[in-house]
Amino acid sequence: MADEPLIYENQFNVQGGNFNDAGKVASHIKAILKGFGIPSEAVRKTALVAYESEINIVSYARKGVIHLRLAPDQIVIETIDEGSGIADIELAMQEGYSTATDKIREMGFGAGMGLANIRNFSDIFQISSEPGKGTSLKMIIKWQP
Amino acid sequence: MDMEVKTAFGADLMSDVLAFAQSGSLLLTGLTNPQVIRTADVLDIAAIIIVRGKRPSPDTVQLAGDLGIPILVTRFILFETAGRLYQSGIRGCLVKVDGSVHSHG
Image (cartoon, rainbow over all chains, first blue to last red; front, top):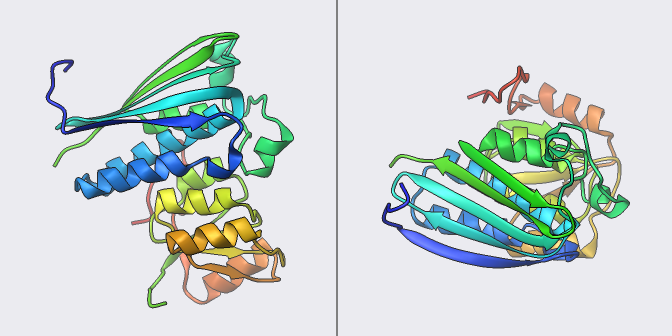
């Protein structure tokens, strides 16, 4: 799988705290995948996990990068951020657990559903984090032509 | 504006909208910030109905225009808006949630 040929690859920077643009990268990724004719269900899942990840970077990190890799049978979204990190990943994954600020809640997020959504809509989901340094996520969504 | 919409979803929590709303549906919400438009764009929502007499912020209107997503506003509360739409034949984009997400079809 590691040597799989890539159809497309790109990366996008996300600025922490820039709530106005939160979701822009996810929209862009959605448009790219649609342009390649990826089936709508896979596009939806990918856009969703990218969007929730982007919200997390904007909300909890100084900055981050979202990588998109499109392979012939799967889409890989990888995010790496520099930020507060997550001390207890198991706790953070629990639906309803959140450390969100009022600003995040005003946007309609911060109910402790983000990571759970990301996990539920990914075919493969990996998370690693170092408190004080940042968080990395890897999400794989399978697709078939 | 020439489109036909048969289903809708209503919530103020964008994470729930992302999880449950379906493409081509109406989105009923009390939120008025640009994130509603971003969420609608990611999901290909047909149009947004802002309930409870709220008005979208200028940023929100601008973004909706840029992305071509119609915004409608109503003074009815979410429950009343949903009931009236249902009476007119609009159905939920999914009927219920039972552990996993099922589309109404």
